[in-house]
Length: 182
Picture 1 (tube, rainbow, N blue to C red):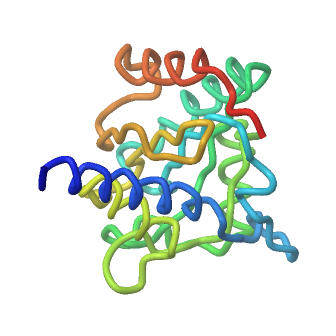
Picture 2 (cartoon, rainbow, N blue to C red):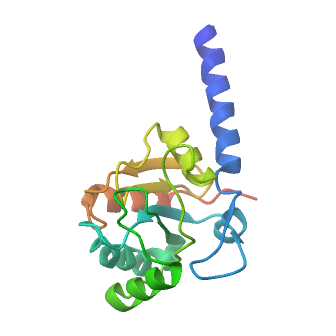
């Protein structure tokens, strides 16, 4: 009986966390007006990635953009959050980051303001994703997959490339899930 009560409580907590996970606002990179992620991306499958321009994983920008282009018509988006949390590998200004991403890798997926993704200074989105998965980013290009209903359904370490079969399968699984009735 206690187990069933715990499972029910856990389910309620998970639903509450999901309801608020994306109810946060961030400025687009070099933008002035914050965007509420819940309002802008409601009903979409999202891959949230902490990025850096001077990292061994930086070439993943190209694969992330390919995923974004391939699946956007099906209700998918990659959201990039530059972070300087790991050995100062994102030292530039937001303008420098935007120029680098656009000119070097042709990034068109949404990039948001530079944030902290670990520790006490982590942004609310990253604190919530860490809480939901029990895993904080260990390095740049850590990926969290968010379902259409705003739940974190998977996380992938930095070494997982955007074209990794497990990552692609998880995205396709979430895209195939029915949209919630609103």
